[in-house]
Structure formats: structure tokens, C-alpha cells
Image (cartoon, rainbow, N blue to C red):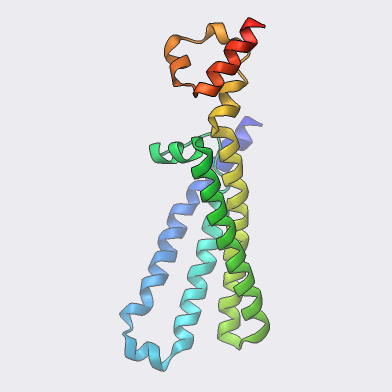
Length: 179
């Protein structure tokens, strides 16, 4: 089971070249010039729909990461603070709903090039949905209260580890030891 997790975590690194391709696709129309884009709006829609598809696949691949690992210190700060984590989860959920709704709406009422753009928006929303599930797993894995209140042997913790715990955890663990 551990080797499968490592395999998926390794596959998640494919997100980096894909996000680079997506960013290149975002700036590619700018090199054509605004005059060309105003005469050929379908070129802009086609290029940006490809970028949205790459972003959606990138988010799907990033959801393959190991949720118990955090690579950046500010990322750890976000996930250990329930208010910040819930705000980030809410923003991701709202963004997902916006892309789903606009993609479905555009898919139903638009022409061919706009329909491809709407389809790409739906793909991005599916990627965001997978990433939202990953964010929930990261939040559960990094919440201070979950990981630190499950400690059954309070006495074995060093004083430095006890100082890192939130006050409510210290209080509840002290009561559990005294009872």
C-alpha cells in the first residue's frame, strides 16, 4: 500500500510541466497582437480552452499528492488554523461551482468555439472538485486538534511538545491524565 502511495505521489509531479504548458497557452494569444485577436476571437477561445483543460488536468494530478505532507511553511500554517482552512475550502468550493455553472450554461447556449471553452470550463471544475477533496484530506491530516488530541500517552511528550499544543488540548489532556 505504501508503494502505491509513493507511486501516486510521484505521478503528482507531472502537474508542474502541465501548469507550465497552461501558462504558456495563456500568454500565447498576446504575442499575436490585439488587432489579430479582435478579428479572430475564436483563436482566443480555442487557446484559452486548451489552457483551462491543462489547468484542470494539473489540478487532478495535484490531488494525487500525499495529504500528510506539506511542502511550504505557510501552507502548514493555513491547514493547522481551522478558520484559514475553512476559508480556503470555501473559496475553492465557490470557484468550483462558478466554473461548473458557467461551463454548463455556456455548453447549452453557445456556438462551437464558445462550446469548447465551456467544455474546458467543466473539465477545470472537475479538476477543482478533485482538488477540493484533496484539500479536505490535507485539512484533516494537519489539524492540530485531530493530530494532537489523539495522543494517548500524555506523560511521554516532552515539555517542548506540550508547549506547542493549543491551550484547549493541554487542558483536556491534563484532565484525562488526572481522571
